[in-house]
Image 1 (cartoon, helix red, strand yellow):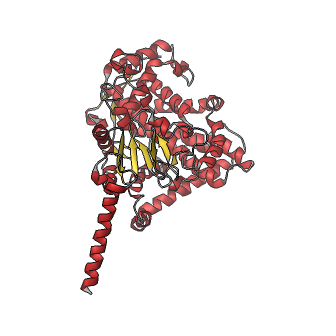
Image 2 (image 1 turned 90 degrees about the vertical axis):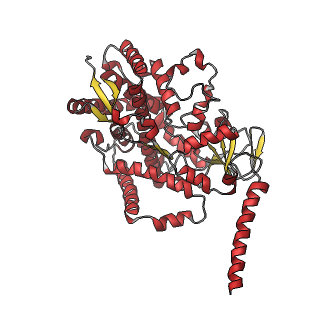
Image 3 (image 1 turned 30 degrees about the vertical axis):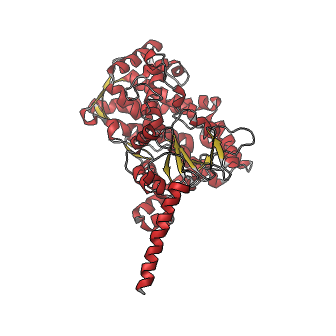
Length: 485
């Protein structure tokens, strides 16, 4: 019997040795540079992904190995500006789409972001009505109402304590998206506190990091389910049940309203979308429309509070442009050139989606940068490393909005490298609404408050932990109301 055990051990050793040798010397991706251990097994990349600082390690890999790096046996990452066109961009006629990696989007396979090409186009046509210029004009009174409530509640809070934890306040503006998706806000701003479901949204995002790290390993999903604590499983069920209840309540409304759901309701009446797709896409819109904008607001507030000259220049632009606060609306804020430069620089330094959303080559392979990439190869572009690479941006670490306004120091910058929203055939459907909302809220904040960094939040950016999106630490800002009409 002992010989059988020894034989089994030898076979296992030979298998893994053969697997390692194949990945390094015979795999179709062997010509691409990268750390040898990473090409042998996915384990090093997964450990890096879960470290909380993967964005910095990925930048180091690109600086060491170049624009295209092999980070796992069957995965490549790209860091040259044209990659945004080469991978998620529109393909030539007759070429297959480089689609989303379904292993990554398994839980979102019927949503706008995770569906296949044909379903994506159908759902996008339906939702596009909710994000048109006319829809945004109709939605403006609702959006402004919540922005005014945010300012009103902040003034009350600041009267008691000038130092406010701003990530929570910006997370509470989820009420805007809650109303646009469900016609039923969460009441976070009204109560100045978290609704339990909003807390679950952010727990859900943290869970993505673990899922994405192990999804490619055999039996990983089964093991995760077996090891999942009962309380976590209970939270997941509650999360889905709450979403379904919110959707049902909105569907029961008879009067049409200018929100995200209306276009899906009309499409359902014409048998163009299923109930399951409505539920899934409602959840997607809530997560996509709340967490990312809250991240940009937090980053903008930290950077403005840390840079007095930029803060004052932005304040002067707003004060000069508007005679009173009532003139600040979704249309008028589009004329604030310096504010747009500030937001671009915020999203370069602190992108709302800092890590790669993986794509996968079609089974027969495809051409990328005049090189053939084999089929079923996972491809990724990490925005944070792209935006911080010195090949693309001069002095990439300092906060310098002037780089977007023609300053000669930055004339060699590769500005097309900044793509903070998804691009190409699946570009972000809510980009225009996000920009309008960000400019409106930031203009109102700067009009009403001066901002200074609380000592508790020194080096706040460095304290952020990456778990697919940012796990943001508390951001304490001292707000001083301005004496303006």
